[in-house]
Length: 332
Image (cartoon, rainbow, N blue to C red; front, side, top):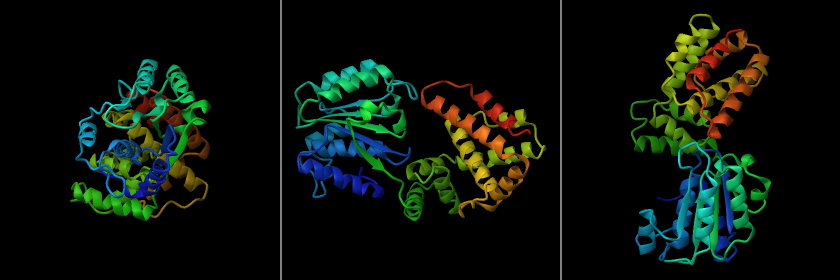
């Protein structure tokens, strides 16, 4: 595994800091979901412990330390994740990591802690981490990974050096995505448009867009928008239509809806849509914006963002009610 093309600047920055013995004890990797922050962190951890790094300071993948890391059993690396996906990281997990960094390193120089996603730490866990960050042992590197930096306490942020992962230029992201999708045969029988549309739906995050394509998520997305159009034009029952989307992941549903409402508001404010959008969707948007007021769209946008935040905090929402209430909101 190597870094992605849009991560070269961050890699060079960190390797230069390491070579100059100025590597911070705490790093915060931030950026959109789907930018490859977690894989970058793993690659960097491997490089720090590799016994025979390459000329570009990548891990060799062949030495004893690399084999241990590839097997997930290197004694100098600990990964802290929610015990259940979407749930908080608990204080006991952070305390265990704190005890780990106080032990002598084995098999190499650094002791490395990866916390992903760091914004899932509850308040007690964050306070426990703060104690470690205030008096970090020597040769310890703690890497926090987050796509919601604003949810981290200011006391944590002030003790970390931030490494930002910005979205690549759209043409570069599109080129990478189409190449990667073809490698996995995800676009083998599909036109080029879905790749551009997937990037648009994920705000230009290439890995998130690839995941959409591989999961054929654009197909239910198109069906969802057609269903909304039917509701708005009073040609379909919102409850019956909502039932057809119960299998869709709640986050995927809300993210699609957020993008859709944002596009409606852009049209209502006189902004132009990006040219990659297909003509059928634009027609649907024009019909909907003519029927639904700007105030109703803003209210729905706020509701969707609130639900998105609740889910990211580990709160279980009733999926049926989420979909049905969203559909009903288009009746005005």
